[in-house]
Image 1: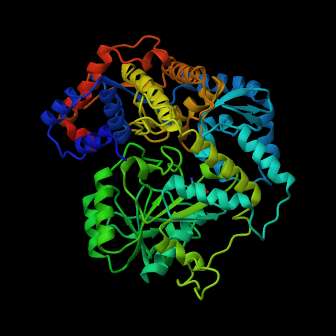
Image 2: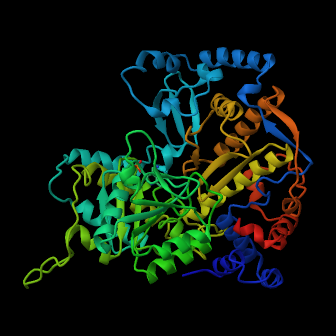
Image 3: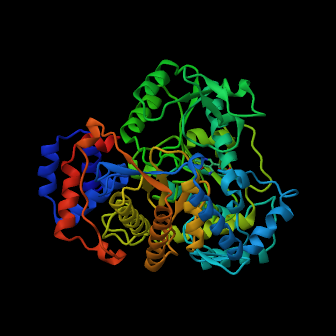
Length: 582
Ligand code: PMP
C-alpha cells in the first residue's frame, strides 16, 4: 500500500501539483509526515539538502589533470608511492609475481601512467562484518559492498551457518532440496512476482529474460537504454552512435548482434515515441530503472509512461534490478516507484555471497521456461512452448542455502514495518534504517564538498552510493583520492559503486566520512585542485544556495530534526520543482 508521503512525493516530482498546493499540503502534515515526505522526495530524486553540483561561491575548484602535473605534484606522488609501498608491500609484490598467469581486466581499469606504481588491487586475507583485511595486516572499512552483493556485511552468521549445514549435507546437483522450494516461495513473496527461476549469474538471468520475451512475442529486437549495464552477453551489449544506430560494443562482438538491439536515450520522451513506432519489431524493453552508473537519474514518470506503452503494445517490460533488487527495497526500484514490470532480473544480494541470478515474473512469461504447471490425477500437461534453458550450477545447494538464509533474514527484518516507504525515519525495517543512514552520510559529505567548492558529489539510491566528479573525467586526482582513502582505512570499489551494509556501525560511517574529508584535504593541500571561475548558467543561478557550515555533525545529531533543519527541508520543497525531475 502506498503511504501518504509516497503519493505526494510522486505528485510533486511528476509536477502533477503546483508549488503552492505542495506547500499547502506540506504545512498540513505532522512533523513526522513532513520528514517522511522530504525523505521520499530526496530518495526519488537523489537531491539532498545540499543540492548536487551547486556551489556557494563564484569560484569552484577543478581537479588537476595528469597532463598538468608540475614538479611538486610529482614529488608528492613519489613520496606517496614510497609510503604506499611500506603500507602494502606483500600486495604489491603479488603484482609482478602473478600478473602473467592471472588474467583480470579490472587490473587495468582507470590505469594512469603517472601513478602506475600506486595502481593495484590489494590482496585480501579475510573479511568480516563491515571490514576487509589484507595480507599486510591492514584493516579497512569496506564500502565496496562486493559489487552490491552483501547487504548484511561479510560472514553474516545466519548465512555462514546455512552454507556450512548445506556443505555437510553434500552437494547433489540433479534433484531438488526442500530449501529450493522454500527459497523460491519466499522470493516470490518478497518480489511480488508469480514464479522464480535461479540462474548461475546475472548475465544469464538477463539472457534468459530476453529469450522469454522473444519467444513470447515472436519479435526480434530488444530495446534498451544508453548508460545501462546488463551483463556480458552479446544479446544486450551495444553502443549508440550520434545518429541513434546500434554499434557492436567492442572487439569480438558482432554488428549482427548489435543490429538486434535498439539503444535508446534513457528518460527521453523521444525514446517512448520510437518504442511506440517500432512496437511491431520489439520483443522486449529492458531497463535498469536506476542505472548504477548514473544514480542521479531516476526518471519515474518516464518509466510509468513506458509501462503504459508496453502494456498497450503488448511488449514485455523487463526490469534489470541486479543491483537495486533487495538493495533499496525487496522488489528493488520497482518497489519504490510502484511500477510492476512483466519480468525482473535479480542477482547479487539473493545469492547471499554466492554466485546467482534470478528471473522472476508473471506466470504468463515464466511458463515459457518450464511449460507451466500441471496437476496429478487428471490429463493436464504443460501448455506453453518452452525456450532452451540449462545451467549446471543454477540450483547449486550451497548457493540456494545462502540465498534462502538471506531471504529469510530480509523477511524477518521487514516485520517491524510502520508507515514504511523504505526511507522513513521512524520505521524500524531493514531498508528504512539502512537507506536513511546512507542518506545522512551522503548529505554530510555533499555539504562538505559544497563548503569547500569541491567539484564532487555523491549520488545515492537506498544504500547504493557513488562519488561523481562533476565536469571532469576519471583523472589523476580522482584516482589519488581512492588510494588515499585506502591509506585512511577505507576500501572502495574501483568500478565506482559503493554500498553500506547493516554491519556498518555509526562509528564506521563516521570514519568513512572522516577518511573522505582527510583524503580530499591532502589533495587540496598538495595542489591537486585549482581554482577555476564558474561560468554561471542562468538556469543554475536560481538554485544556488548558501549552505551554512556544519561543524562536527555526528550521525546521531543529524538524526534529530531541528527547526532549522526543518526549514531547510521546507526550502527544498519550495525550490523550483523543475529540478526534481532533472
Ligand atoms: N545487470 C546489471 C544491472 C548489473 O549491474 C550486472 C552486474 N553488475 C549484471 C546485469 C550482470 O550480473 P553478473 O555480473 O552476475 O553476470
